[in-house]
Image 1 (cartoon, rainbow, N blue to C red):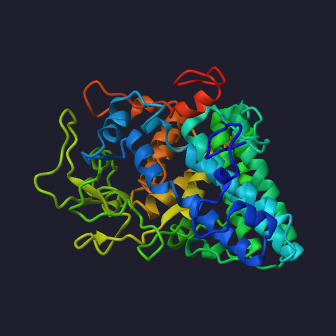
Image 2 (cartoon, rainbow, N blue to C red; image 1 turned 180 degrees about the vertical axis):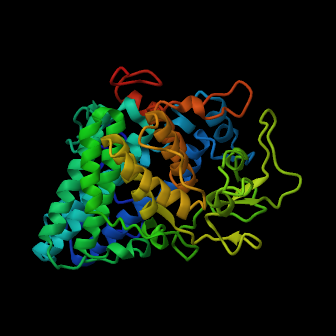
Image 3 (cartoon, one colour; image 1 turned 135 degrees about the vertical axis):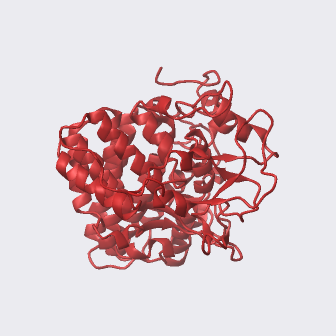
Length: 471
């Protein structure tokens, strides 16, 4: 069972309450799952899905040297991703508790769905399909950071039972993919029913069971590609191509930003996007190598449009710094700001992408590389680099080395998905290229994975920094 996100026995029922204080309590939801209570619980699941995202982006982005947190009020948040080692009780132990809380909340919600008499069978199917999709998403965030350490998936065990066992990385992806398949089956069974709860604006394009299934297919495509590079290989790349055909992928550059997003706002009772701060904000800064590494256009001088659109000069003088860290706070991320580059302001309402069309095209490029469809891969890479980056076509040909294809792929994923999901570090790890990320500080290191939190190890009577699978 999951208690507060940890696989512990003997937890109280209060530990399983949906985390949104405006939602019904566990006992109330399960004993009287009315339409209104289920709608409130569904809203809580959307809130739970987005809860960790700003923190996830800057932590994983720091490990990939996309950005740096120069706030001096919490030194470990600066030092650990740059100098290491990652502490299982600090920086390295994050992004475990919250996703498992979300998974437990989803399990409670689905139990309540099975007991309600207020919804039609089709509405229950639609609700269950959406919940399973969000559950799969939570598992993907967990395994992206723990990789070969694996994670527990069979967490629906009785109170007082032994902790659920860890399974290998491939099995976590397989479990998530099974959830997504089951979700699509439910969404299909829902026919033309409407969701019996409001859909957040960031998911407005997927506000029916049929369109939400396209979102589930998109997540399946991503999970298949990630699983492919975790050892599955060709079969998973092939599965990804099938999933992409059924997703919301379109080849129109004007639709590159379309997709599924997490919403934030400064409205009363809501949560602002904490990654968005003004140009004189003192916390998050872009690492200058983003501009240094950007490819140039045909003129040989002007750099990738993605870099110039997403990076702005900081308004702080002198630029902030931390003793022992030769990275100055001279650049800010513009992606979560509002206004033109000449007049950027903080935007607490800025959404964060879950998955967007531009990424789907790059996932298709990766799957085409993996299946040997190199002409198709080159076409996809050119579509993104030329349309989004303003760059000339790639110099790749079908006779180019495999390593060159991967380098081109990862370059475009880095700049198209900058500061959105920790892409650079995740990609470098899964392709064995962590050594390509510059350390950036004296005697520093690029982490290989985030450790299992100490409290999880303790629940299993294992030492700090445990590796339950022995990896």
